[in-house]
Length: 176
Image (cartoon, rainbow, N blue to C red; front, side, top):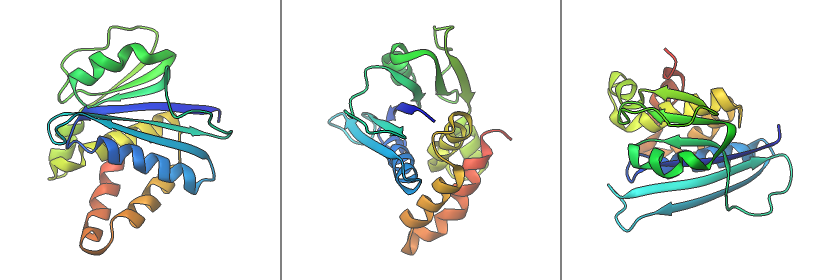
């Protein structure tokens, strides 16, 4: 596998930190080395939020990322801030529902996912992050989708158990 270094960023309330946690938990389930480090501005909802996630077969010396293999930008300020941190040949996933422009770089793979529109088609705007997560998992191979689905089953318990089926559907909806 090697080492995957992700930066996931967007507005607070877009599920950015949860997305990173799910990847980290799925990596742990698969017996991989993982780190997850959140960062958010003073306002949780509406402020900027991002996290770094590293998933590797070998020991991770630091959770700090200077160069990412993948950046997930859920809004334009996140693309502007983190686009330069993707290593040449890396991947950028942009939420083209909220980002009208393309990355300026031509040495990376770009995936434009209309995450908000797809989530709206599923009748729940809150699953835009799961739509994006499905694309990231499928295109990077960082963890298996089955592992992500098992994490959802562990996270969403009690009255949140009703959300499992919708979230699993959202994981698959990005390429329909």
